[in-house]
Image (tube, rainbow, N blue to C red; front, side):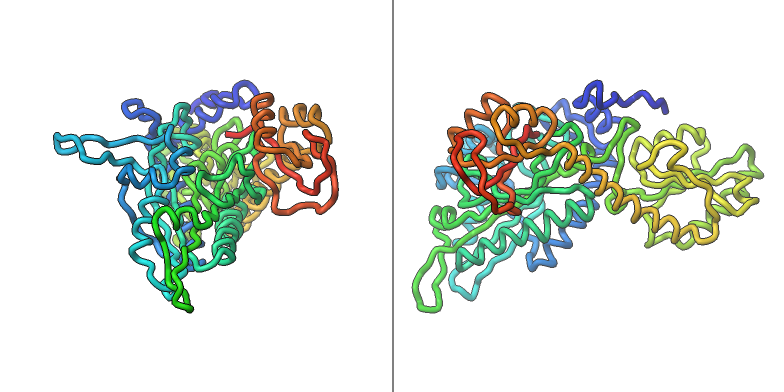
Length: 480
């Protein structure tokens, strides 16, 4: 496999990304269906592991999985004014079915607050029914004009949690629990992607929400990617759909609801955080194949000896390592090395006749290309050595991404400094502006306030745009 199939990042970052998606067998653009993609084996296997890790965390926090219809009556979408205004340009409608015009069009779900609100209004009667903690894994449709595999497609796959509570305090606690204990924890521990936990501004919050929280990650081109959102919906949808309960005083009250979701754009975040000009780089905890073993031989006698040794070495790996023995005879070892490097396998073990004789193997790390990442190690104790290396790679990828973010983040004190800093990464600034001020900055710089970090310094500073004193800092960046 030639090594020049990936466009260097420095030459064309966007093409580099598309090359990795294609060459690592992750996805293909579905040209017959506008704005959609086909998940290929590497991409789907990665999503399965992501889904597993997220699903475990969601269930550990007390939520149960459910499934709601894909089609939503259009009248439901129209019930919450701010919500419909936010999603109107992205909605796809079904107007005919069974050869006839429908009495009422259906909307292909862009998100499920409305139809779930309808059923919650039927299911919740008393304070004893609360909290209601449900989540669904599904696909949604948003008619995006500009698409990019995983990052923004017309159809995408995600989870969306929807909960109902008796008080605003309970809803707020739920919203933050998901942000910290599920999304941020998964991003940093499994994806090795450092994230900023923050509150969205009024301009950037989810349509119909009381408050929106997010995790923001920095990609290798200095741009931000919103990796997950968690919304306190207040009582807006409860009032629109009459989601009420009778409290302990026998008084009817509106519920407080939340919604939260992450999607397959996490795959895009993973690619753009860790990968290099040789191809995909995957953190071991999410790598579909953690270790690939490449037997090396020239004839049948060597083949038998080497594969027997490989069989002994890998006998105890099942259940401890996700591994593959690449014993294909129709490809050279060099071709196999390049293929598995391109697909991001964290460790490669090479075994030839001399290794069998010496009781050793060669181990190559994907995170350290070339000779520096390759070593000769004994076959004895190999399993524990590989497990240790995988932990080392996982931690190293996180630290490398964190160091990159820190090197490309700066505190700015003037609007001119802000404009200069967003060319290279994140700009942290004191902020006391309005939504109109945000809009003007976006028009002038193409940067937005990604979030108001929940971890604030508590010091007084001067707003980068209005000149007023404030204690609030925000993060400006261009974003995907």
